Image 1 (cartoon, helix red, strand yellow):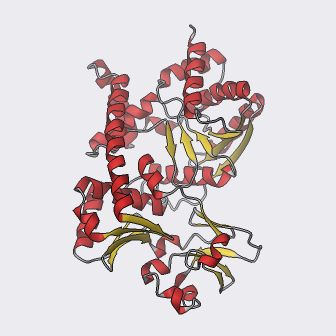
Image 2 (cartoon, rainbow, N blue to C red):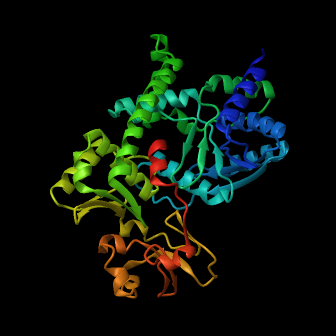
Length: 414
């Protein structure tokens, strides 16, 4: 079997497995113009055509190199040549502070989510090499079971979209050989040779490990073993949550005695998943930060982590959104990436209730929720006038929709 036929069959099998419960009508694909994503574009197009699935592509121009706009234009043309609808979005709001690669990754997923509309599934071109690099990075950081599971073929994202990785068991070299056979050009990002980035340093380390007998397949096998262990731990955490926890508006609430009576691993798992579920952050906080937060809460303090507050209240432990983390998130229809207004006019805005909104509530509604959680409830305003507080007033629930999956389902995918 030729390389082209082998990869076509492998990707088709991976996609069929990802959509075993039913084919979507429309899927999205992130295409940077690099070798991995261009190969994914070609391979997925053939699969989609054979199954009557519409394929749309998006390129995120990170605006970090002079040639980035020109490269995005080439990708648009390549997509047009293949009959694939294409959109380019440009990242313009980086403040030039902090970790560039992390900021770019978060911006990329945010912009893809803003673009996708009714599309639920987004294909990403991560390869077997990327999996090995990820595991080495996490080993360097001292990750536990969750970190060493690596990336999964199918991953629900906190924003509501589902990420599909059809190339996760295919090497980068095979994909480039495939593109050469297809006579399809691609772009190499110069930053991929910059060892100042941790991921690139791991990439440059891989040949030495392979020569010592630690092949890319060994990394994949380790990730599979760790995923089995993770599934068992998540199942236990889910059982504990159903006994001691519940959702309320923006919050997760745990019986405090039950939470601290649980195994420390279950505590970490519930807290980590809760912070990601509430904040929308796809990446869990570091272990040391989790331990510090738990210690602060046990001492009766309020802890701030991951854009959330963790605090004790009347024999419960609550995780809520941090008000300051929501202040750039006023939107006519969607607030904080997950609360969507329903049947609203152009005059309405969905935003955090805040102190000014709380002051307009009836006293019975104010007293049911602690003030830290009250101020971050989604609310509908016209200018400064509070119109609806749907998570607080059951008669107004129809005016807001929570785009997140239920927390109990999120635990199993976290």
